[in-house]
Image (cartoon, rainbow, N blue to C red; front, side, top):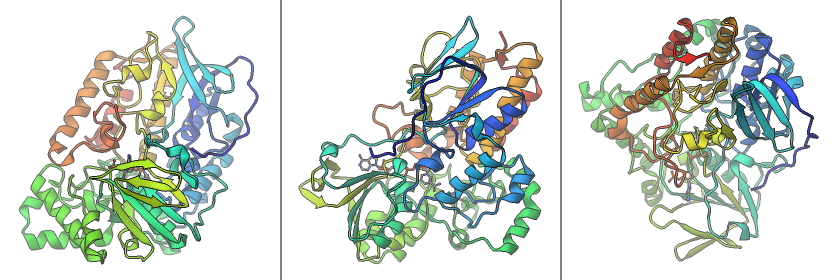
Length: 544
Ligand code: N01
């Protein structure tokens, strides 16, 4: 896949640090700041040539957040919050990347970051009580603590389409969008493969400049309007005033949103007209709140879920003028909220343009990529550009891409072959002094808020070990098993409407164990648990 060349640093001689952090995105930067505060000599390593993580790599047309800007940022520093002004409700990729560069400069983080370097392997040396990490440029870095901060969406997934290397035109892969590519497609016939959150953002923007766009859709999803808008000064003043209270509210919410934690009503208690009115109001408001503040029984009662699904299908039919296209865009094989809902900005409307065509590859899949284009059954479609928006080996993939080996010599990938197991998404038994930011089995919630609490908690765990006169801390196996059980129990009541066909269950990667990847019991419950753990002196960890 196309990617940009980065300037590779020369390998350095043996180097020891108190802590090494892999990844210089939202999580890694926050962790570096926390570890510095503890006085730990810390090195951050990142494959990219700048900070940003996800926001460095995913620079495809239309890429923007689906969390509102006022909480898609760090909360630990009132100064940083005052100095930075977001321009939109859902900022575009460039603005988020700029924000992270601003934070890195403002906190002088770059001097501890080594760019253009990928960590390939990490092994725990039990006798020396340290991690040895090997990079692709040949460095060996050792550290007492190792924090993996690759995040949940850092291992891109490109299906193994036959003939993919034979295409004569330009191939673009959204998570590795070349920095010098630009976003213009004038005069080009463009294919977009994939209609997850990435495809949904691409379609309206690419179709503005391309001569023709053909969207290859395997599974239709429920796309909710984002209702993005520019932020006015008056809104900023209000948001500033509310800031402390807002962060407090995120702590009580199952998704870490600063909004009421429940709809406060059951769909089953309302009549048809009351439900319809609620749904119309929710659709007008848009965003995730349409789903999560609709009816409290939407995720557990299949009939109520169907009411919401029918409403969205009717909206699609009312927006898309060609009835055949509208039907293809209507999801019919999973419930609302069973996949992470993409937020759309004129997504369905884009299919009313003369230059946009939809091809369903559900019954007849893409059989091959040819020198001229894409073959589906007997039809060959011709293109100048093919854009793959086919997702990620999500949640575990970023962590297991590194050959991490614990005390017993077994790797994380081997350990998680039948599904991930962690303690509260941050630690794993047999892997002493190893922590993860946004590890598997973490809350399905706003990630910037999860990162903030995780980085603080990891700092507290390390500080507690040091206070106890040791530099060793490891999750207890029984505690890992019991968190695993809680994760499975939490998702069970939602299975009736959930299905298991997305990355949330490992279902998008051939051969990957189909096990829930995140914790659906609520961010607020996870937060209470991690706070109890630190307040009690980390009883579910051993220190020898
Ligand atoms: O990836 P996806 P994504 N033939 O896995 C299709 C976050 N995110 O990058 O559904 C044909 O959701 C696949 O089809 P199917 C967000 O958390 C956030 O879009 O498997 N098609 C699907 O349509 C999101 O959930 C934002 O049947 C094939 C698509 O490729 C997560 O990232 C923006 C195929 C992959 O969709 C992942 O989203 C973007 C094949 N062989 C992403 N294989 C924000 O708004 C796969 N597909 C912040």
